[in-house]
Length: 202
Ligand SMILES: CCCCC/C=C\CCCC/C=C/C(=O)SCCNC(=O)CCNC(=O)[C@H](O)C(C)(C)COP(=O)(O)OP(=O)(O)OC[C@H]1O[C@@H](n2cnc3c(N)ncnc32)[C@H](O)[C@@H]1OP(=O)(O)O
Image 1 (cartoon, rainbow, N blue to C red):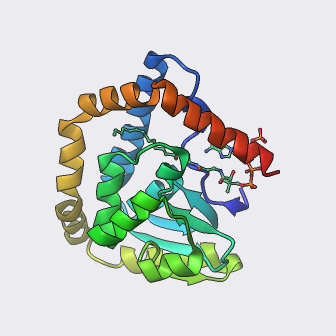
Image 2: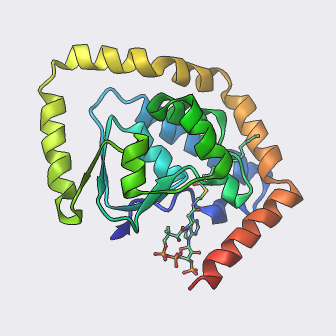
């Protein structure tokens, strides 16, 4: 979709559903992260628009991020703005990209960074004009693919394995945490208010 890289997780999947539904949904989200963050392939994010929360997470899972140079497009883990909390593995992915202090600021404030600020923060690696995002991503891909694969893969795994192992070990507990958190009346109310606000802004 033009102007949106990803709107993040589908909020309708996290509201007004059964606990079984929430558990299956969260397992699928975990699976997406484990596959993408743990992939031994080269992954380049061509960020052609806004990228809140789960959308930012997907971009952060990639090896390199190229974003359209338009201050109207913003990226960040904005969960607190919805009244929800970025899980520890979202937090770990961000720390591994921009460091501890910048992550703490970002997460507590639920900050969305317009493209130029995202570059300053190290949340993205490069800005290019909107119509050059795909070609810049293809050029970056060629550069990354020119590195001997086994050496690049082992290096990637060395950097990411501790975060991945942490989720793998705590997977069921993380699902239980998510279900008990998201099914709380107060959290459901926050999500409803956020969705109503999204619709009103039209
Ligand atoms: C301590 C223990 C912790 C345990 C864990 C607990 C909690 C788990 C945390 C879960 C992590 C969550 C991650 C997420 O990704 S949450 C989703 C975050 N996403 C957003 O905040 C995006 C909100 N949307 C926007 O900002 C904008 O819609 C936009 C993506 C920038 C696009 O803007 P625009 O082009 O102006 O379109 P509209 O705003 O008009 O939206 C079009 C319709 O799409 C609906 N919409 C938008 N985003 C979502 C979404 N994420 N999910 C579901 N639906 C969405 C929007 O309401 C409009 O619908 P309508 O046409 O029916 O009115």
